[in-house]
Amino acid sequence: MKARAKKDQSGDEKYAKARRQSRGDLMIVVGLVLFVFIVGFGGSGRKQQPNNEQGERSLREPAKIEAPLVSIQELRAEVKQLDDKVRKIKAEVDIFETDPKAKAAALELQDATRTLLHHQYGPNEPYRIKVVLEFQDTIPDFAEHGKNGEFVIEMAPSELVPHSVFTFMEIARLWRGGAFHRIAGHVLQVMVKSTGIEHLAFQEYSPNFPHKKGTVGYAGRPSGPAWYVSIENNTRIHGPGSQQKRNPYEADSCFGKVIEGYATTVMRIAKVPGSGFLRDAKKHVLIRHMIIMVPK
Image (cartoon, rainbow, N blue to C red; front, side, top):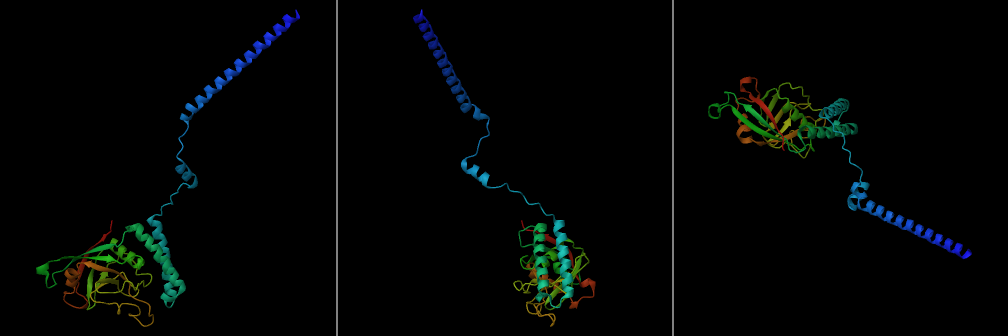
């Protein structure tokens, strides 16, 4: 009986061991199936990762945030504020060109005006303006050449005289009429009908753009909006210290040059009868249009 009991007990242990082994094998199989499922199919739902180079760059480089655009109206307001500041200082100091406060204010105005120029008319310079004329029948060659004429002015670089360039661009943009009304031996001068454009805030001048023959400058003290074309080299007589002895640094602003129509049109103006300021309006050479030519 004892032997039989031991035999039965041994058989039970054997079957229990077999059952445990079967369960273990089953768990292994289930684990393998789950592993294959996760590796083979589970990854398809995940977002594809970039390669190492792209991934590293995306981690290192923050997203670029565009700076808010500044409107032309805001830039104009800033220029107007700085322009008023310069005019106030100009009225207070003796010699503007050597006063530290005045020079700093002028540089601020120039920088802001240059930015406004590029926003308003684009960054590609030089800017050009076509001047469309009407000659009246008082000119001796009217029957031969008629009433029409035009020439083109190329602006100086805004790096040199931005305040003067911008002022002339505004004169052209807001043109309401005017005429060549002064015939002198060295200049042909234009009067400008009211456009709301003020004279220059200060006598902006660059020695890198002097009053050579064919250049364009502002007339008067303070200068502008009246302007003239030099028909001879006026570097000395319109340069620093030329118009008065008190300030050896002050000069007429020179801001452009005639690049088309000088010989055929500009010098034709000089043929108008009379000299100096022409009181007879019928002798004036009328400026019908000023067309801004913005480079692409």
